[in-house]
Length: 181
Image (cartoon, rainbow, N blue to C red):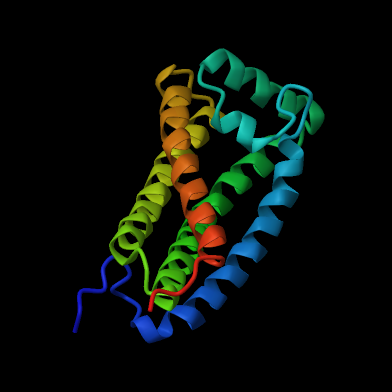
């Protein structure tokens, strides 16, 4: 059998069914995250968790956290923590969804096989970066004041977003690439 890395846990014939499952899970998780993110949308963090991920320094991050508490004194931090927990599920399902989409398209078009395998592996790296980022964000929500955590989140979020964007763009543009004879 050919080396099927990075998605060796799926037989290539199962990519499509796995993709559909992970796509559904990604969409469901996105709805949950959108609902919990609403508590994090304030004047100080108009994009909610996205602003928090990119805060970069403790003063900015604490200003955002305080604005969530001001908006919802009883449940603001609980909802923020729940959003972070939900993101641990999300990082698993979105990385699988995008990675499988890339692999399906490259197999179907018979093009860019090696590049796609690298991109799919990088999507697993993006999920790992997201997990580390979430750890830093949770530490700040829990009251940590170390300047390390907002930097950790920022330095993990930036390459994560670049990898995700590359996977999404490859998947989108891959739909329009002609099949290699």
